Amino acid sequence: MTKSHKRFTFMGYKYYSIYFIIKNFMNRYAKYFLLGLALIFISAGSLSAKPKAKYVFYFIGDGMGLNEVLGASIYASQMEGIEDGYKAFSFTQFPVVTIATNRSSFSYITDSSAAGTALASGEKTGNGMIGVKSDGTTPVNSIAYYAKQAGYKVGITSNVGVNHATPGSFYGHDKSRNSYYNIGLQLPESHFDFFAGSNFLTDQKDPGKPLLPAVARKAGYTVAYGVDQYQKLKDKTSKMILFQSDSTKTDVPYRIDRKPGDLSLSQITECAVDFLSKDNNKGFFLMVEGGKIDGGGHSNDVLAAFSEVIDLSDAVEVAMDFYRKHPQETLIVVTADHETGGLAMGAAGMYELNYKVLLNRKASKDVISLKIGALRQEKNNKVSWPEIQALLQEYLGFWKEVPLNMFQEIRLMQAYQESFAPVRMGPGSQRPIVASTGEKIAAVAVSILDEMAYVSWSSGAHTGTYVPVYAIGAGSENFKGSLDNTDLPKIISQIAEYPME
Image (tube, rainbow, N blue to C red; front, side, top):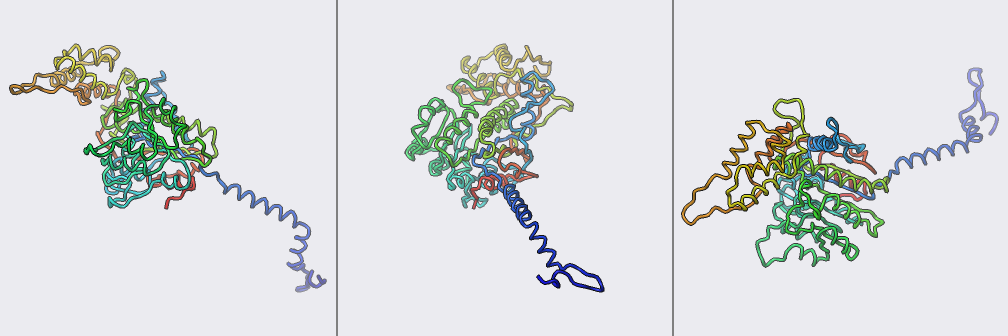
């Protein structure tokens, strides 16, 4: 560079040229500048390269509203002898907690099939429809389908029928959720790796059609009844359906009614993780439905609902055990399809709760009803009031741990008189005596206990309240703000990198 290029004179003053300044800087500091620039790019790259979710757990509490979760945490703390606390469930401690709306295409109040379709596919549909758009005919694919298409193993599980509304939404397509046989036929067509539930539901009326378990077996699925059978057969098959050991039951019993040998939701989750992890370096997608919270809400049985939330929490803890081994690659999402029953935390204008009284319950309302029905059969409908009292004392603690006032006892006696009043029928006629879940005495007794706990219900059906969303693990920070249920599968698919078309 000539001297004139280094500096120039203007109005009597000498200045160094910009060209000279830059060149001189680069000659002296270029290596430091380039090193810093490289570090910036490396740092930026590491920040953007967030780990994707290789393992996805998608938990859906059917009928689990915010009050079901909060009430169950209070009840669980009472079980542990803590009178003024909240039990910390596995999922309530997740770092991401938000809410979601859940209306269906034509109503602010959704049913399980419309909500299940939204949670599975990100598409709204009408109540009663499953895996189709709101026109009732156009099929929509679920996130499980795209996971399978991307090479991941897939599990769809529940503690109700495996072709019920929520699990069916992940593989089935029908304008009616009640088309159980048709939805069940579509299960093996999905080629998903693992299914679990109480059994197949069916509306099959044609004896010439094959039973759904036989259809599944023909398609290459091994059907195991109970965990013991699962353990014996799991290494001999690549596709499995796990049902509970008593194949005559359409539902797994409520947690409070469970007997040895009955499936629990945590056992279902354990078997699913075990099976999907076998010879699998790619990853998996697993949906687990706590399907019986909804049943407690429909029957306004608060203890049944609370116990099923606890059962769901136990299942989530199984996923958390897996997460602790693979924290950078695992995503766990817990949500609900809707709330059921309109559960209120408080009643009768009282500013208190008394969930401690619920600790005296020994069975669900359904089982108490069946016990009364069995007594009715045994006594040929000639059941005495003291016999009813003994049964209510055994299963609800009445007159022993739970004293009744005069008005409560009158209500029970009226229900007894109405239930066991002689029925005059024509000559040759005989009133059938059957055990059912519709015994009025059981309903009145459970209602009285709920009132003592200051529990109230606004409905025997679904409500339109927000549902909770909890998330932890890879990409969980993306579940933020108020969401809609259609957002959840879309966010999961982005994090797990199996795009939904």
